[in-house]
Length: 135
Image (cartoon, rainbow, N blue to C red; front, side):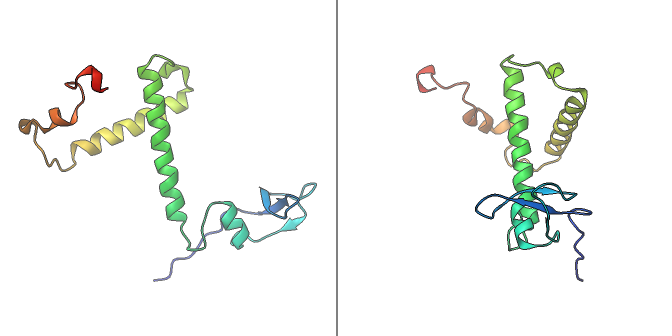
């Protein structure tokens, strides 16, 4: 079964290049300095968007998802340290964060637990019992 590629953009991309001839931006419409048009599957356009020649949009998506997780952890840390309040974020961002956190918690509840709570293994992993000199 052949997978049909969908275009990345409609009516795109007009490109702007720097003095070295490298792509620096993509535009829907021709603007000053963007008279060159490349197809959305042109290798330079794909490379600019982070897609490698190996056709790895999946890799880019995975990296993107990993980065989103890092941002979630940063926000959680800032909230935990009382540097920001969750209510400081726009309502849409709050809703997305709560939705992702809820999804991750539900998913974790259904995950395989190799070590039960009775093993005490969690105490070994936690650092709460470490001597303060080791922290």
